[in-house]
Length: 180
Image (cartoon, rainbow, N blue to C red):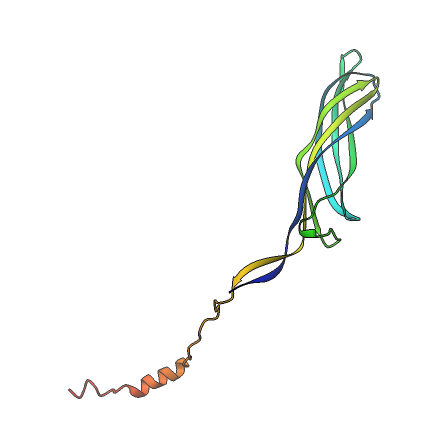
């Protein structure tokens, strides 16, 4: 006859990923002729519970290399960009997101500039990033067991080793070899 046992453990109870695309602007001291490059570095992210949804807070540094003065000079503009994103992660087995749930967020694809244009002394740029989210929480696992199997070992009577040594000492005939 089979039966089930229930085990309560921590496990991933929800998992998902999402790509975010956001537009930003940066004002520089010169009229921009051409955007020559854009680098995104120092990305930091953190996730928390916000009324049953995952709130992702993060920031990164943007470095935009541009030319000005009729393409005769270049400069690099730097900006620290903070962001917040709210997402709903579907949880398995009707679990709910609580303050005891552990929220793990990581960049599956780091922020990257996908477009940059200029209008006078303003640079408009677009950043794309892909974030993975895992929710770890308490969950119940049911395992099938075979109730006919006895998982106890049969224990034999154990003899005290001191008693065995004493019995051997008393039964040895020291004159055995001398008698023949």
